[in-house]
Each structure stands twice: as structure tokens, then as C-alpha cells.
Image (cartoon, helix red, strand yellow):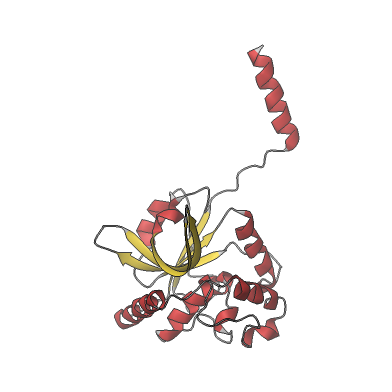
Length: 231
């Protein structure tokens, strides 16, 4: 990717503050099991069958009156006695946790001011319309990825007024006149498709060196040494 710039040595917050701008697209790779499974399921997009780094996509809204950066996203947010399922507005603070999101990217599609306004307007329409997050549609997409010919056809598990994360981003960009994934049904677009989009004029990638895995034998040896020191 000639438009790819890899960034190292920054915190998630510093990286996002440096590159977030209204209308740009964000990608995140979660460290939890579900996120890794989503990344693994996208391996069929890659010729070498490598798992995708990405499990979530969102749109940067810009800085608001509170001085914080906000994003539009379709996600499942679970808090104590409160669940939000669908398109929503959030501060980008949750993506600043390096342990939860060890890899991030910001995609610039070179949107003109009119396109940015259209993206933000359509995103707000999705929030107001209470568009839901559909796990069923996501599964339909991950299954269709195994057979590229199916991805141009409608998602077999499609539901009304539902869009998962990357489908939401694609829908909003198409409404603004930008198609990041030509030939794909909007509900068959995955985060990896956005990352590979030929329309992205610039991509900033924040990636860290993978931490060395601690084997079971090393953990046991460490515990034995610690106990011996206490005696």
C-alpha cells in the first residue's frame, strides 16, 4: 500500500488525536476472543489466508463542545443495567486502551467539505433512526466471505433497520457519493475491505511489536522461584 504510513511509539490517544478528523474512518483490532475470531474469519479476503487485524470500524465525528473527539459507530455497548445496541455516538476514549485495542488505523478518503457534511448528516440520521447492530447480519457476511461470488448479492441474514459496524461505515460513505467497496453488497462489507479500499488516499497504521508469549512452563518456573525467595 503506497499510501500506508506505519506509526510506532505513540499511545492510542496520541495517535488518534494526531490523525482523527471529521469524516475519516477508524479501524480497531480488539484483543478479546470475539474480536480475534472476527479477524480470523476475514482471512479468506487475503490471498495468503492471513487473518485480518481488524474487528471494528467507525467514523470520526470531530471535536465537540466538551473538547473531546467523538465517533459514530454501530456497536454493542454493555454497561451496568444499560445496553445500547446499534448506531450511536461515543467519545473515542474507549479506543485509547492499548490492552483492549493493540492496533488502530485511520483512513482518509480525501473527502471534500460537502462530502464530510453528507457523511455527518447521514450518520446523525442513522442515530436518530435507531438503526440496530445485527449479529445475525455479521455472521451472514463472515460466511459469505468464504465464497466471493456471494458478496455482491444481498446478505441472506439481512434484517430491516440493521447495520453492523463496517456495513454502517460503507452505507454512510455511499450516501455521500463515495464507494469504498465497489461490487460488494453494503451488508457484505467487512473491516478488512475498508482497509484495502483503493479510494483511501492515506492510511495511518498504529501497530506495536507483539509481546512475547509466556509459556506455561515459564509461568510455573516463575512461581517456584518466587516461593523459594519467600522461604
